[in-house]
Image 1: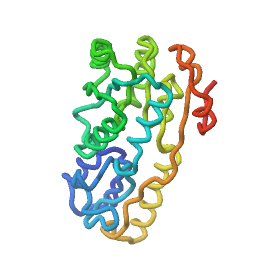
Image 2: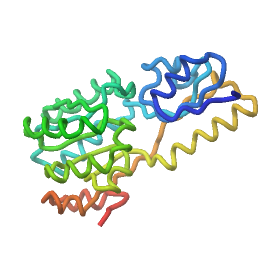
Image 3: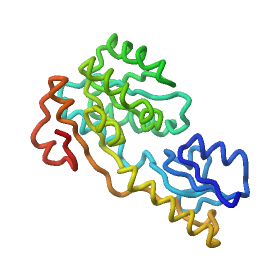
Length: 239
């Protein structure tokens, strides 16, 4: 192999364990420094570089803030996470906790590793009387996005994710990077490395542009009135 492209944190970690010499272009793992993929974002230092979605970008706090604005009564917010996904790091958890404390929100962590776990996860949210749900930035949720949307609507639970693909199939809101646009940045790394650039010296790229997407059909289905001020700030509103 001349180069490996790793499209998730788990893939990047597996590739790094397999080789210390073949260049690896990672795509969007959360906090690659904490995961041990790179020494630093500015100077990766080994055979791995690419793009990241670091929690210190403020994205997690913004998601919780927007969800609270859409659902003012939300004092209990469930966090759906996959314990097998290395993308949900301790730093991610710490950032969420700090934001929740500042907004007087109680977080409820709910685990799910596969589609088979989702019914039980939503039952746990119902028992704890969760007011809303945030899906951690795991690619697991994109795979199961249709079922997640169906379960949330059935339970009349407002949801926030980091991927617009979730909203396109029925989740309430998303705030994050346009993945289709940003993941294409990995091609730039592939091109540079195949032309002779050293991955150890190519800085890891973080996103600078985020979009808010709201599904009004879902809002109506769960009986939620989205504030006009929030709709005016949305980059895309699904009618």
